[in-house]
Image (cartoon, rainbow, N blue to C red; front, side, top):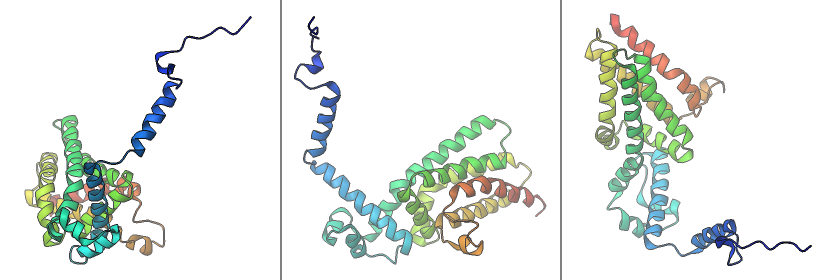
Length: 246
């Protein structure tokens, strides 16, 4: 008996199986010339990545547009095509990820506030504020770790502080609002000082200077954000509570 003939499906009628057709389409899309919009987007990302890395290492005043162009492998005239000057590039680097990190922390704080109801705790609020940020940087890979170091380096400069105010004040004030409810018998002054100490420790962590590696003899590592995450909120919460007698 001969092998029965199987009627070809719609996807097979041109002799190509559906899965192979999909792969063929994907390859065709990959090989097609990029549009001008796609080329522009790719160029911008390369420039912002290069500038982010350089600013994270050398700060605003330690980087020139020529340095950025050299790292990307382009002429400085192309940088001027996209960015008016170095200050404009610096702000673009800051803004590219600032909305993401501040947005995630705001959501985490609002979720915690809703879950905690009338009984928020200092440690709970700090976990929402700190853990969300540490996870984003660590899980985001090298680019996000570069941005963390960039923020840490520029946060105490006039250029960076101004952008910190613009992009991060709302989420900071949300944290303070929850802390006030968690610590009704504490002065606002103590709560703001407590936040100041928290953000100082956070920025020192994000900077990844390697100091902790050396002083601990290799026991601790400055890029070990999961280790920081396990300890920081609990440690800082104890600091807040100790301010009651100040």
